[in-house]
Image (cartoon, rainbow, N blue to C red):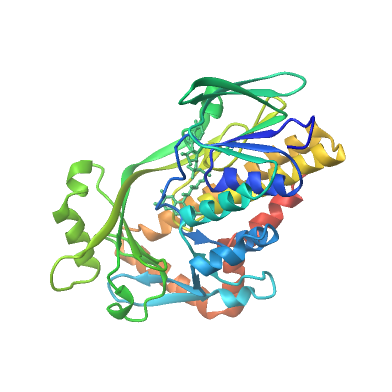
Length: 402
Ligand SMILES: Cc1cc2nc3c(=O)[nH]c(=O)nc-3n(C[C@H](O)[C@H](O)[C@H](O)COP(=O)(O)OP(=O)(O)OC[C@H]3O[C@@H](n4cnc5c(N)ncnc54)[C@H](O)[C@@H]3O)c2cc1C
């Protein structure tokens, strides 16, 4: 570590903590990245990287490594599950706006592994597993994080602390910061299989949102797997919806085949729309990623928005630490820029995405499908739609907030 410089402390080695740590360490700022688990989790959660996220991660040297492990997806569809009609959006319309005019389908655990390997090669990045952050205190000079380790409780001193330990953030909870919003009554079930849906569902794109008044669903492809997402009835118990019969029924309904599906992985989870009341706690503690906000996965904006937080915050910390920038002005600006865009765009857009796909009235669903088709077939409308759904425009807008 550079001598006499207190590190930036980061709780959580998820996509958001890893991104912040890498940007800071690449600017010669010492970091201590603390992860509660004894190794990186193999999370089968996020798999979609949007164009502006790939542009930002390119500046850190990460994107080529993600591309080599992921699947480039140039188009995505909104489909009518019953008729097979589809609206197809071509991300190539964004070629003048981004260096990566496509979605990259790559599991988030591949991303954190790439970043932690890069961190290990940087002299002042200190990655510590088995360090569960449970609280902190701060004063005029710095912040002290309290962590549980196999050797007992330890205290680590730093200049700032970033709480990036996910929705269950102890940094946020120990400061009693409200995490306002709602939890939907239904849970979502994701099943992964190697079955080649592309050979059995006509014209299927690698990312397809399928509406249906009875059961909407999403089909997403990664390099090795298809992931199939459906909502479940709130009245059904977790045991029921995770049972072999239930899972097989769901898969047979989307694509009938002889014999049972081989299911590689399944996950049932609660879905929330929540935002912390502030992303800045006192002067030196900040929240980012799921610790600060959470939303439903329709549109793939949770991890992407969290990575955008991490970059925005780390850039401001570089200005403060390396160039003597105004700490209060810059960290308050981080809070405004990222919290407002989360409320005004990510929360409202993902809630709308859910509302659009789940119409139970057949007429409404037909009308929405026709609207998507009209938009997709008009290059100007389609580009305007893609500028928002790929998060390019909201990211630019966030930097304009003063
Ligand atoms: C099924 C599903 C699909 C999704 N798909 C997408 C998608 O395609 N695109 C997208 O953008 N988003 C998606 N999301 C959301 C995305 O997974 C999250 O937004 C993202 O993981 C948040 O990253 P994070 O780093 O903030 O938190 P996390 O990924 O939750 O990482 C937090 C890390 O902190 C560690 N930790 C926890 N507590 C402590 C502690 N006290 N001290 C130290 N470490 C701790 C955890 O072990 C973990 O490693 C999806 C979510 C789900 C559930």
